[in-house]
Each structure stands twice: as structure tokens, then as C-alpha cells.
Amino acid sequence: MYPAPLLRGRMPVNIVSSCHVQHSIFVASPRFNTRLWTHSLNGLCKRGLNLGNQTSRPRLDAHYAHLSRARWFNSKSGRRMNITSDGVIHALILSNVMVTFMWASAITRQRKVRMLTHFTTSYEHLQSGRYYTLLTCVFSHAQVSHLFANMVGLYFFGRQVAQILGPKRFLYLYLSSGVVSSYAAVWEQRKSKKTILNLGASGAVNAITALSVLTFPHSMVYIFGILPMPAWLFGVVFIGKDFYGWFQEDTHIGHFAHLGGAMCGAVYHQYWKRSMPMRWR
Image 1 (spheres, rainbow, N blue to C red):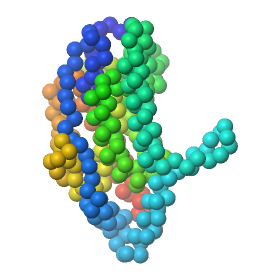
Image 2 (cartoon, helix red, strand yellow; image 1 turned 180 degrees about the vertical axis):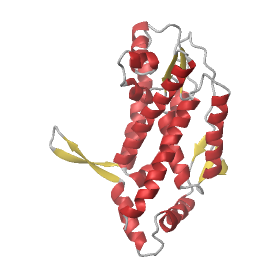
Image 3 (tube, rainbow, N blue to C red; image 1 turned 90 degrees about the vertical axis):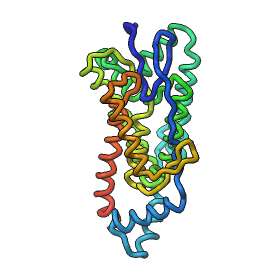
Image 4 (cartoon, rainbow, N blue to C red; image 1 turned 60 degrees about the vertical axis):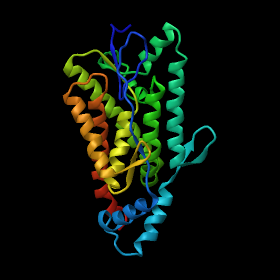
């Protein structure tokens, strides 16, 4: 049993009545303009990939079409399954919804303790050998608004990124960024000597968002679904908000975990940008 912990998600959550947590609303509803997406992709071909001639574009398009699908081996049936980029995103969203349903159905004390034990993470969790919680907490949202905000970001930003990376690389980036952001939250907790339980997919979603913004800075993000904003400006606000919250020591939101996830996206962007020209020569 945890000694009256402060529960903290990548966004504010409220699991048990004894935990006082502030609420907030995710105000950015990302949506990409198809024309700007095409323009950004063409610009990426010419500048980032050094493929300025028109004869390179069919090869690039064919490569993206190939990346949008992957073959996964089923050891039971001995067959290979074709998994699409959208399929991976839908599977991630479904997994998050299922874990949220588990939180909602945890009406007894025993079930709540089980969820806190296996679907949140903290320094005490790692001391007890439950390292897997660095990943399981990424799928954990105890509040519908928390789930909805993260899944909106995953769906809109993730679809664009997954079409480029392919389902396998996208999944690896998402999961590894989630683990890194979880560890960042635990590390911050250890340094501040606070007993905090962390959960939420915001770190992983931030990695995808950061990669998307850096790759397509001129695409449009819509605030509240109606107010257009260039992706690069959204990225500045996006990162600045978490830096401000971190310096203000807002203990109800895992700002350091958010920044850890965004850093993963930025690092992967640099790796991806440098490796792509070699890949298409």
C-alpha cells in the first residue's frame, strides 16, 4: 500500500477520492492540411533528402507506400501478417481504451490497488523490481478527458508520422519514448524526494508530436479545431508550456516527462534526417 501518494499523470488525472488533482483541458486539436502536407513532403524531398530532381519522386512515393505496411510473423499459425500504419495506431488507441476501462471497473479497494501496482510507476515501483511499469503506465489513463486528449494527439499527429516511418519504426519510437518519459518522471521524483505515481501516454505522444512538427513545420495545427496555427509556432508553445510548468514546480502534471518525450522525438528526427539521404541514393 502506498503512503498517501500524490498521483500524477502526463496530464492531470484523478483516480481515488483521496488524491486532490487539478484539471486542465488539452486545447490543441491537430489537423493537417493536405496541400501543406504535400508541399512539406516535396520540400523534404528537395532539401532534407537531397532528391531535387523529379525522377526521384516516384521512387520516394513508392518507398513511402512500402513503409506504410509491414509484415509481422505469427509464430502460432506460421504465417506472416500485413500490418498497416493506421492499424498500429488503432491498436494503440484500443489498448489505451481497454486499460481505461479497467480503471473504471476498479470499484473495489483490491482492484484499485492492483491497478496502482501494475499500471502506474514510481521510484518505489522500480525498487520493488516492477520495471515493466515504465511501459504499462504509458497505456494507463484513469480519466476519460486524459485519455481523449492523448488519443487525439496520437491519431492526428501519429497518422502522418507513421506513414513515413512505417508501422514497425513508429511502434518502436512510440514505446521507447514512453519508457524514456516514464523514467524521466521517476528520475525527477527521486531528485525532488516526492512520492508520486505517474501514468499516461503524453510522453510518447509528445515524441510523435515533436517529430511531426520538426518534419513538417509549415503544416497547420488547429486550436480548438478552428484556429489555425503553423506547426512550428505550435511547437514553440508546446515546449514552452512544459518548461514553464516545470520551473513553476507544478506537481500535478508530469512536465519533465513531457519534455523527455519531446526530446526523444527531436533526437529521432536528427537521426532520421541524417540517415535518409544515404538510404535513397
